[in-house]
Image 1 (tube, rainbow, N blue to C red):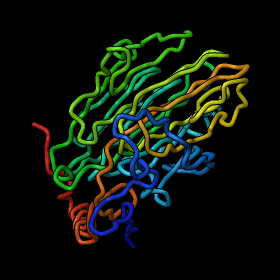
Image 2: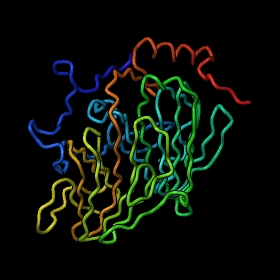
Image 3: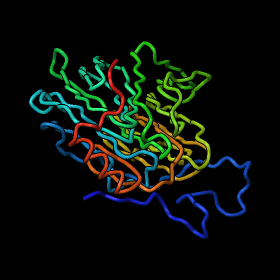
Image 4: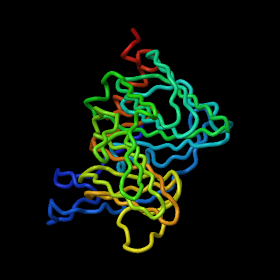
Length: 319
């Protein structure tokens, strides 16, 4: 059975974000995004037995539109990841894989092959359909880790040709800001540096932020966007900040979903803080989701799996 989710609520035919600007608030005001929800990623098993932590998924789709799921697959135990993610289909989404340690070998039905290594990113637009596999490999110490984010495609692009944007670690710019804050810019812009990922419908930002102990970080986000942070290392505070000492409220595996506003603030206390800061434009479209396929209607979903069974799922062929 398909899982059907709406994407927010309508009042009088007009969309209102959950934590939007208050009535009468000046368009020129500078509003710090508050915290809408704090969550901790939960252990689960996917693929052929890969142990991972899921930060959010199908149960949270309306909150995170246009994003669908975030999986954290860091591990130092090869038996928890070596079986990987054998051949499986995707349609109607984008998968974004960001590696921190180890490698993932990738191959697909279009004949593409490659290795995603530490610091690399692969932004795969599945579009009309692709069948692929992702097989993790640890480093010399057996450590392997990264994150995979699923982003929805708008209805107009769900049946587009598949596309890859893959970038090595050295192709991703890193910006140093006040206080020694360092930001790797995968998508979006920081300090005049543009990330290499381009041409994505949801206009995403994907930043890897490192805040030294005692330092603070501010970043403009623009109103109406969905914005969240996921902590990778250390501890700190996100959202409105006190004038005095920083009392941590987020640690490794903590996800913070922000309300609406103009900018995000973060600060580290006695230890450094590292987190992903991710944002995108909501699609506000109906979602029909089953497994690795995400469409807009149940009929489109049934068609996808009928085609998969008949061997006509992949529309673009090699050569």
